[in-house]
Length: 626
Image (cartoon, rainbow, N blue to C red; front, side):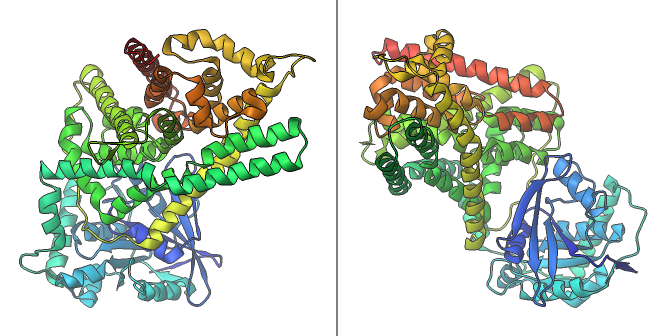
């Protein structure tokens, strides 16, 4: 049978099991010509890219979420199934099934399922270089004949490793008609059909693949240490500790450079603009506000660098395996570890990543505790306060005190997430059993520099876009509130005392006084609901306007002069729990299908934030830090 496509741009879709190297292949084929959006009506990420073939043709390449079967037991897998079946507007002209050449069992079962759909199909054996080094021999011609689909090899992380695949895709893109299997009346496979499919896949592997008798690989030798129940956990904790230390130490030179750049812009503005509202807006509103957030970009990128490297190395799945027993004791499914770890970067993709959890209540629990993980948006708040109030010195001879405090804040988020999940699981949902944790561990492999660079570029672009839109608009609002109305003629008090910001802040201050917050903090927390980083920018604007020409060059110095240590510690405690991210709340609403769980998350986090800040402030005052 053949499938005739229209004369427009071809649409090819990459599909495969998790850890098959599909994303690395996608990056190798499309490079920086990528765009990320959501599928219509769902929050599942839609990643597509333009593939330029050797003959000059353009192919729209779609990277589908990983799946083991079209039975689709999670939202991610449902999207993959629906795209394959043509239930979205953009039906793929060709399915490119990506398989790990070192582990074909589940991949071949998926290929047999895809054949039943009847769409043109190509099987790509990725990581063929690793398979050959291990002595794995694959009879490609026989495998193709057994499956009834063309088979080609690739090594996505090697230079020239996708040349053969690119040539085949070029050939297929130029065809007016693509060969396909005979279509079947597709129905979701039953458990017995999946077992039969696996037996057929095992038969094909036995007939076409020769494996060494006892593979003694680098992966098995490393896992003997890193998966040890004691040494493995110690290594994981040390790795996390190094990550948080690096966020401070590695980023400092770049942060100083960015700070110097914005200070220079402020001096330049003062030199060429007359005193007045325009200079105040540029210097106190834009530069003190947006600049105070952009300065933390190096720290955020360092955190993302660690996460991307660990994902590409194949260590993430090991970390999930190690944490399964601990998380299971708190009522969380082992698969929750990766969404929660992703939430260290941002809770939004972390919440979306919960789609890999089959059980609805386990997924809901993970969604509700994901915002408690210390996301990158908290870094500007944490590092600003830590740098202002915690001495930059070493303890125990080699640990940085500031890094230790940062590590403690991350640990507080993790412990609180485990505690809250235990409450939900054992108090409200104690009759719901947690299914056993099953996870396929990928081989260790060196990260592909190109993929890491693309990942960092994408996240830097997202952060700077956010700084140029949400944060900038909030800074304009804060500057306006802090600048108007203007003080009466002859007034001796600071101009900000007559402003709308002062009026609003003093009205809210009684509610926050028990936790040690002043009216300036009250003003900063309100726009901070849009995004946590805005609080830093808002404080910068408020204190810059309040100080006039004598305003401190660094916001941290202003805080050190105006806050007590007890207030600073209470602010840190507040931000461990506070639900100050409107985007996260919106994603919770969309993922849970209504307002109920969004409001429950908002109010329980707000209550925890107030209680934690209240306790921290009053204990600190009692100990003489007031």
